[in-house]
Image 1: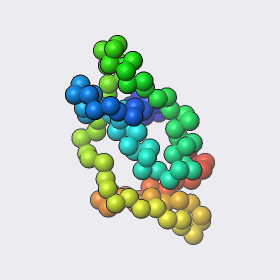
Image 2: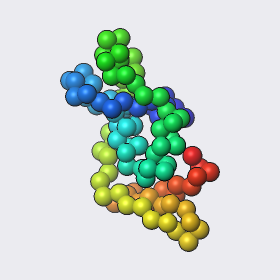
Image 3: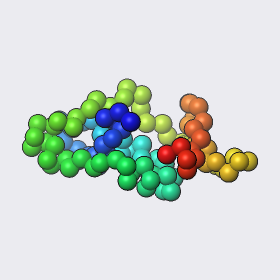
Length: 99
């Protein structure tokens, strides 16, 4: 897992933090169903936003250019896998063994 997916930040609205990928990671986590989000979140480390600001933003990573999709839905396929679908993109199969 690359550095941009190892950390997440809840964000704080500071101007220098705008566009940080760590907050984007938090938003992505919140789009996952709880059972998978909690597992992934346990493996990631939360960035303390105040400490990051005071240290000169060493955890700042530019967010991806593509906006976060809306209208995400999820369903279980015939195999029992959880399938997450994006309006403009491919389906993502989320299985317990994949995380």
